Length: 205
Figure 1 (tube, rainbow, N blue to C red):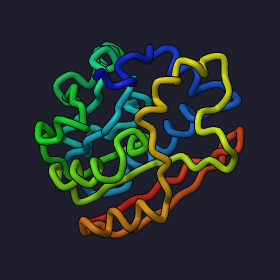
Figure 2: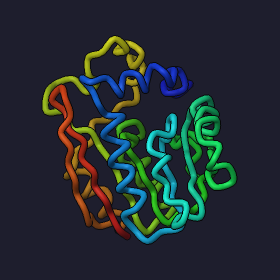
Figure 3: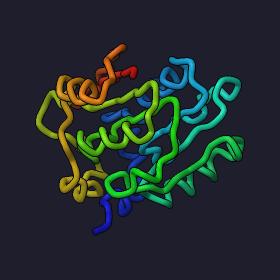
């Protein structure tokens, strides 16, 4: 069975995410700038890179290698086209984390923004164990109202995600990470429109 993310057009996803009533694309871009510069690492792996939002903030003078991982090959192709200046520096990997964790390389830091919701705690633990980073920076969405997808003209594009979506809780994620020897070191919150907020949780091994 195909992963539902392989069926969602990138333009629809990004247009939904940047609506004034959603504003997740803008918020994530700003948060990623901080993630890239937060810790003394030389390699970073971005899980669920989609169209590469935030890659313009990569500090080339500090990082030696960035891995962009996504299940959707067309997303990765778009990333390569959008960021030609990262040629030879950014390596894009088309990997289904639910089935192909062992194909991931090692990295000093993993960034997983709005990703754990679509693979679940257990798969995320397995992924982190394999990559073995010193730092893990996650952004999860907390729904202060009922709907986990904000209302928009693109709403039905995401219907297939119901079958793979897991609601992630801050406390539970902290426990899950502690089970694999990662301790919470930083927490940030950003309130969004439509009764949602982004919570950034950073862990260190």
